[in-house]
Length: 155
Image 1 (tube, rainbow, N blue to C red):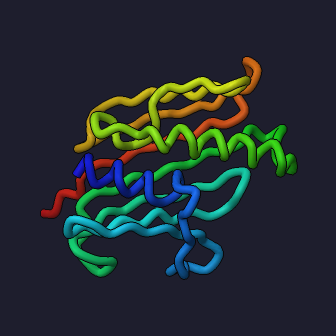
Image 2 (image 1 turned 30 degrees about the vertical axis):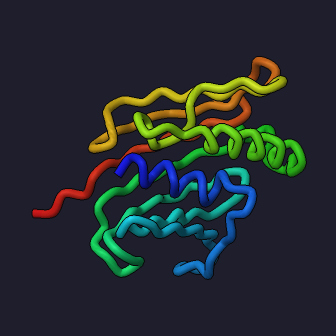
């Protein structure tokens, strides 16, 4: 599962070639990836604050859900309306996610580039986890997001 998640994340939001698909829900943006008998969909809405959810299913979009991760947060309120700066923050976030690793396939590893710094704190493992990520610009937190998820367990 971890290797699949790495491929999926690198092929969707983090990819310069990622393509939005027709969303299942009005007002959402959605990305998908299929490989190795698994189907991944990332579905989110908003811009400055963009809550969403990633779902992995067996086989295709109608398949049984086996793993999920929800996330919520975004730009600090003082930057709502600052579209160009926000786009530069998201560009940095994509670079971080290009480096997602199979030992922590939720979000990216710590990283610095120019005035930007990314950090992520994670509790748990791929089966059940929660965490928080931050992007700091010139020593100030400009983006914060919380995430949680794990394997789906049926009754």
